[in-house]
Image 1 (cartoon, rainbow, N blue to C red):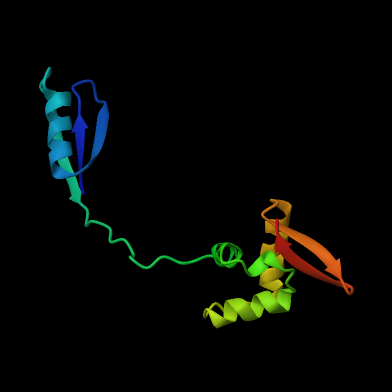
Image 2 (tube, rainbow, N blue to C red; image 1 turned 90 degrees about the vertical axis):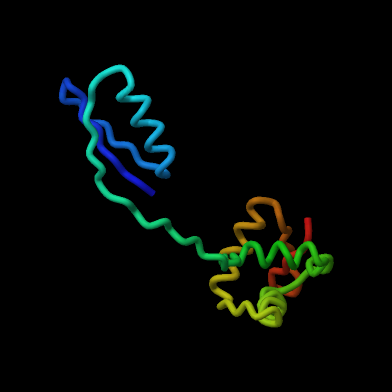
Length: 122
């Protein structure tokens, strides 16, 4: 990325940031009609993007739903075990919050069986 500053005759300062080609086009556009001066500020290194993206708990729960895991009511312990088998280890306290969010959004249902809440596909 290139960053440059243009100072117009009336004292107005314009900062342009972009690729070298984009900045050159903007300088030409801004300075075309009048005699302006510009000062290059700095050339920034391009930012690297991390190719590994984090998979959220909500995404993992959704994947279980798609696989048919929630066709039968499941306890939070069963959900924790299923996620653990996939290498996603979360404490029950973290899972409970995400499951409640999914219930409130009507993405999952919740039923009480034997004094325990169980989660099921809606």
